[in-house]
Length: 73
Length: 162
Image (cartoon, rainbow over all chains, first blue to last red; front, side, top):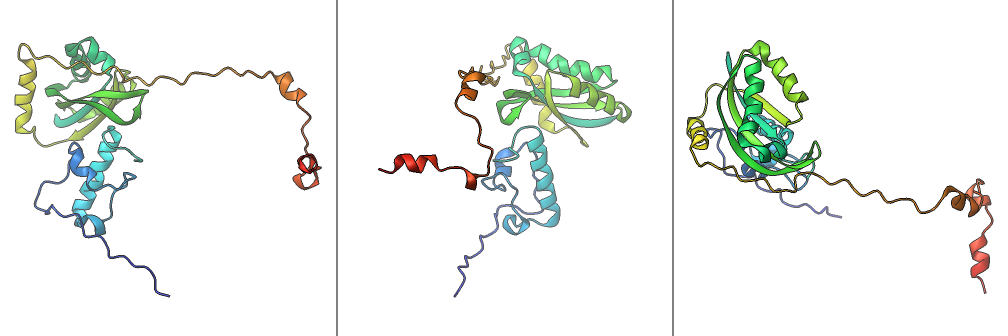
């Protein structure tokens, strides 16, 4: 019996490593990289390099602390 | 002296009283610990993603300040104990963004009025429903059967059968 395999979603495009790193105040931009439960997407999904993904993580965590983004959506 | 970016989450009740007083809360706290506020402005007033200190809404103030690093723990402690500052985020930065000075001076212009925050910032406590049944009523209903379920007599099935 064949397993149901869906094609992986393409990475969320629209950012180069040369651009400014995501900032905690830029909420609308950060929301693009969160799923429905406000979890951060993996690197596979965001298409970020290691450093950019770390910057994204830091920005989202700062935004959560200050009440701009939810911990659980 | 190092430069820091600080985002303060202020209670809307303080903002409603007086905007200058609300800004003074930050000015006083920083000055008390030997620092200077370079710029400070109202960033936004918005609904919080989750309730903080029993509040649904709060006012964000973005400030850039210079303070000796040795005095930071004392400042942090003061902000944490303050009831007017709901939360804060303190980050070390290299320079103040160019637009910040303009935005700060725009607030000092005569005629600048801070929009009054909406009234729904405080979370109302759920009303307590008084218990109607007394303890005697509950006890009068019948004694508790503490035998295992399998060994309890099946009362309901006997009543339902014709």
